[in-house]
Image (cartoon, rainbow, N blue to C red; front, top):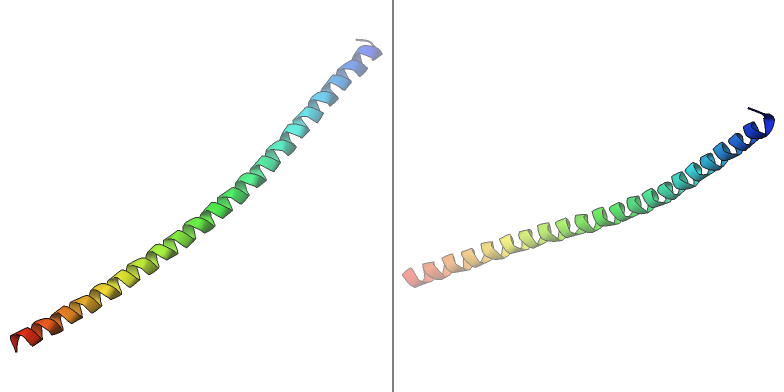
Length: 79
C-alpha cells in the first residue's frame, strides 16, 4: 500500500468518524427532547393523580354529610 492509498484510507475513516459523531449528537438532542417530554408527562400525571385524590376526598366528605343528614331525618321521623 503506498502513501497515497494510506492517506485516502485515513480520509475515509475520518469521514466515517465525523458521520458517527453527527449521528451521536443528533441522538443526544432527541434523547434530551424525549426526557423533557417525559418530565412534562410525569408532571401532568401527578397533577391528575392529585386532582383524583382531592375528588375522592370531597366525594367521601359529601357522602358522610348526606349519611348524617339522612340519619338525623330518620331520627326525626321515628320520634
